[in-house]
Image (tube, rainbow, N blue to C red):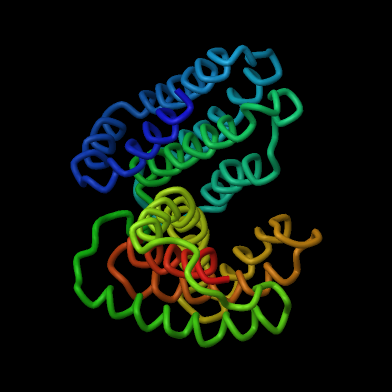
Length: 292
């Protein structure tokens, strides 16, 4: 059961790469916008079923998941399914989906042994809400949640990966964030599996939030300038202040993540698909875990 839940949610998130799924959702929601409320009902019911299976369901958790799923849905419904420029209410939806997960709302009511699983479930629910509410329902432009359409995406990834190695490794060593380089900890096969796990479990979800949503929104509001790219990168960096290893707030991690975020954002801006920035993100994280 513990393994099935993450894979089930991941399958739903990846299914949105198939163009027919968001297209059909959008056609149905354009015809009957009220159907969008089926989404929070279904996702809240799924979460309640998961925690109930482990004997951890409580009234505070039910109220929290209902608020988490319904408030952003109401904000999307108020604006309607029309496709247009990104609004401030769209940004509010992004914060509603991100901050409760980032700040671990609900943790006091979840037994320690299933906190990781519950966090994963809410994370997956947040990603699905983002893809449905902002992608399919609101029709937010520029999310690039599609498979690559240009071969040059690989060149952007390769160039940015070299830049990341040249900048992040010396700086990470100088700041004491990275341990000295050592021989590869894993076999090549294990390293490949590690890369896939990081791509699916960390890189793609973070790229959806920080590039397809937040960076995309900033650039639509304030223009596709280096200033907008830097603002998005700083937000990404600050999200790592509460991450280990190291004392919190982790300024070393935040500095390195800001630089990495700028590179991820540049690749996202240039490439045809979010797959490119997610792949770069996963490559950087895999090298860090494998060699440092």
